Image (cartoon, rainbow, N blue to C red; front, top):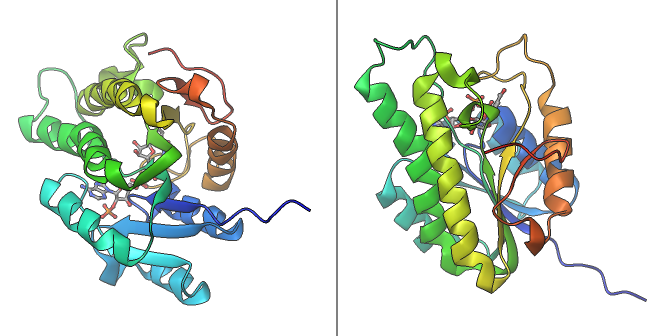
Length: 236
Ligand code: NDP
């Protein structure tokens, strides 16, 4: 008889709404032990309800991804709830809409870079010691960050920050490879969330189902690559 696999320990950022919340729901449903992080746990009603329904299996902890001090606090607090991380999902992200060339506010660019690029890079660095051998890191990117495409013209701050995040993914992949840790960039599709809008093509359920299948199938050969939620390679 094969011994039962221990539950995976997964940490999700930006878990209070959108894709992050859907990740938490599906991870709990498959038996993972989940650390769900968000800026204001006291106001994360859906997460707190899930925590009540899954005692001991869901921990809600504070994390502002653009704040390195917050990363350090999370790294200190983490051993109190889990003894290692098998999967880190850098999901939190921001999109400032309504930008156009000639009128891009510097504050938008600064916030986007800190949240979408520096955030996942510095958080992964801060939690690197907690990632177990063979762990996986999934960075939620976007086709709008592909230098190969100019679709990002209407969202310059977002597009530049996701392109920078893609470089962070490639660098983290090379730094963590020797520990057997795969790091990838993932495009979730155009999804019906606050960011994607109600006219988007797919539901969070479909996107996250696809993303988890892609993550489950990742090997070290895939590290440093960029895939969409159906497992199709995305050009950098
Ligand atoms: P939402 O706007 O619905 O949710 C964004 C999440 O990120 C919220 O939980 C938000 O928290 C959190 N967040 C934003 N800034 C910070 C911060 N500084 N610190 C901590 N948390 C923060 O977005 P989606 O769920 O749609 O997007 C999830 C990821 O997928 C993002 O990285 C996005 O770029 C990417 N993506 C989404 C697409 C789509 O069509 N939806 C398409 C391509 C990529 P709070 O409630 O506190 O603001």
